[in-house]
Length: 128
Image (cartoon, rainbow, N blue to C red):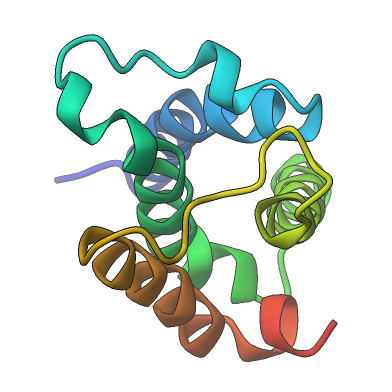
């Protein structure tokens, strides 16, 4: 039998291990500077939007959850705030983490992931 609490803890820990470095760097205005891009240099100009869009899409159902309590609710609220701030930074031309939404075709795909996050979390992300 699967221990549901242990499984949830594992999945949440995994989600935050992936999301925390991206969202905290973005919150500090350092995502462009800190995101490794040397593994695929021809994609470097898309990497931040790709990371943020796909991460936001994956986190969205959790961000949209209602009825959480305690530590998990505090974490959900904190990461929801980071994603909202990230959307602001990604779309602000004066931000050091302004993202490429228009150069060639790849940003269309990555922007679609970000838009999908808004659809998946309408109250948490699209409403505010």
